[in-house]
Image (cartoon, rainbow, N blue to C red; front, top):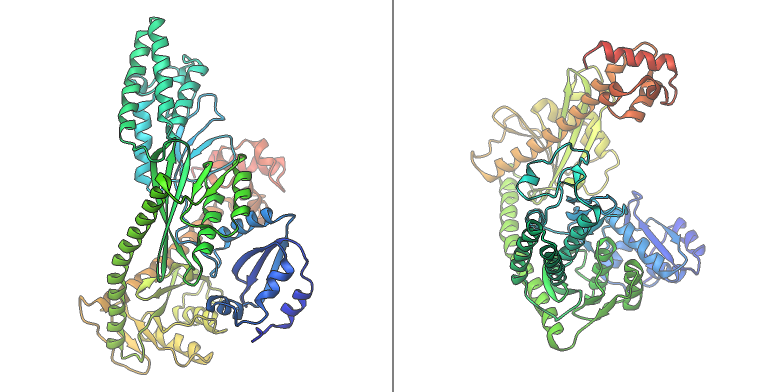
Amino acid sequence: MVMKMNAEIQEKLQLLPDKPGVYLMKNADKRIIYVGKAINLKNRVRSYFQSSKNHSPKVRAMVERIATFEYIITTSEIEALILECNLIKRHRPRYNISLKDDKTYPYIKVTMADAYPRVHITRRVMKDGGRYFGPYTSAGAVHETLRLLKKLFPIRSCKRMDSPRPCLEHHIKRCLAPCTGNVPMETYRQMIDDICLFLEGRSDQVVRSLEAKMTEAAEDFRFEEAARLRDQLVAVKKVQEKQNIVTGSGDQDVIGMARLPKSVCVQVFFIRSGKMVGRDHYLLRGSDEEEDSAILTAFLKQYYARAAFIPREILLPFVSEETELLTQFLSAKKEAKVTLHVPQRGTKKDIVTMACDNARLVLEEEEKKRLPEQSEDDDVVEELRHHLGLAKPPYRMECFDISHTQGTETVASMVVFEGGRAKKSDYRKFRLRTVEGKPDDFRSMEEVVLRRYRELKEPLPDLIVIDGGKGQLSSALKVIRGVGLTDVPVVGLAKQFEYVFREGESDPVILPRHSQSLYLMQQIRDEAHRFAITYHRKLRAKRNMQSVLDHIVGIGPKRRQALWKAFGSIDAMRSASVEELAEADGMNHAAAQAVYDFFRAHEI
């Protein structure tokens, strides 16, 4: 069977080039639902819209939702791979295999661009000349590592470099006090080199370096320095004893993978100079119907696209798709040859097996935690269905709330719970237009539900919850039924006594005290209130800050906007000179002088 195509897709398919590039599939809402790369865009994209009998159910479901597509031409397949990784990370398309957790992980950064580098924690990796070590999945682990470094090496922790005298850290032997200018840059840099070797797992080289420097200091009768180096050496050796030799020598990442019917875990062991220095695991989503090799390939692309360090050898449990292309990509990123290897025997094979076993254990633990929680959530939803007399369990619930201050900055929130849990990605906030300056919760509720349901966009809820009593419920029902949404139950949750009002019934439903269904209704109501009031406070704070400038003669809306754009805060404007204020767009010397004088005469 040939997939159905609209006129726009048919026209675009005729224009596809025979070149490498990236394609972006979009649904009717213009949201990107899939990103892919191709060595030949014309052949690859057309294949989606040809006979569907060879497509997997996942691909068929995706193609049915494609309303249009875009493509970007690249000069090579490597460029396409890099662009694909960046776009997947940015847009998080629904039908791509992707890391389940995309939070920013902490790194340890060494500010090599500074004359006397600092070592600190960061969550942003930038091309600023610094060296980054990580990522670490546990913030506790990275803080513990940093505390250990400060015990082993007397590095500076302060940002100032013009101190007239050393601080307490220097007196307790935790800092060389480079801020006083008494430490030669070469001496400090040698210590920084040792820190980098230590973070790379090359503690053997650190030991040799410290031994050589300790001996040299002793021969030159610098006994205090030799004693300090001796203490560092003892501490490093203690840490070294805790590391187990695994593969003999060299830097490797060992990849292990395990899967259950609906989940996949990838375990990464970090081996530096033949020693295990850490491990990490990642859960992947969107991988239910994919082959193992496709899942592994997707992981390698996404993981190493953002990795701060790539070893020379990566050990895999089985052959990945696009091995040659991945090798080129990783080698180009590292600027040195990188090898992808599937060991068949010996120590390397054993460590890959151990990584796979660890991945399987993680999955089993996740499954044990997930099943009771899911079962409990299902029970709560079923309990709520029973108490409210609904035809089916309210798997998806949408709740609305209004927030304002005497009719000003009126906003509304919509929060979503699925399966008894908040789904924050579907939350929406509204700045209401029809009631500004006139407090009217009924008209506000009419406006917000109309804006949500007038186009009946999927997914539609199984239950709509209105924060309020009979009045708000009646206002919402008038709009919801008016747009044709007749089969979704709507209830109002009154603040007093937390009674639940149903459509067409004067008497409320009283949910049992201390029941999980009552707790769920309270939770969704409180979350809607929190989300609405947070947005309202943000708008109110912005308005209050802008109103300060309203009192300055000669400062109108355009100049006010220009000042905010140039300085970003009232404190920055107050600290600026007349010349700096005059440099903002649309400002002149007279207006700048007026602003300057205003801040001098008023306490803000």
